[in-house]
Length: 148
Image (tube, rainbow, N blue to C red; front, side, top):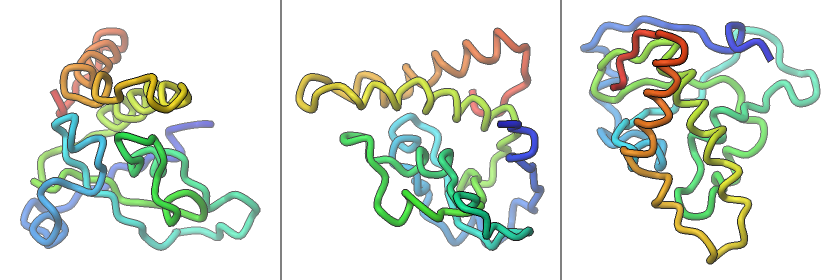
């Protein structure tokens, strides 16, 4: 998949109601525990998504997983469509920040496949583990990030 086509950076004024009328802890349970609250809002698509599977949005689904079980609520599992992802405090969130967030979820999602009861997800759902992934991405790619 070409992530450039899947991510678009949109700019909104910091006093926009999307920042003032949202939960300051964000909507992503995992990211809230990692110290980076993210609001995740479904929006109407800008193009036809009637093709089979076109409304699936795995990255949005990952953002909504439960920190203990690794499963997203049912309404976030299929036909999610496009979403806006932003920081509820109006701070900047750039393209490379989201690449790092996605990399973090790709790293942890397989950890949930272990036998229930044999793992402690809080070992990887925390600010320290998240920052380790983000710093690794930043150092490897020499990106300017807003989330660290």
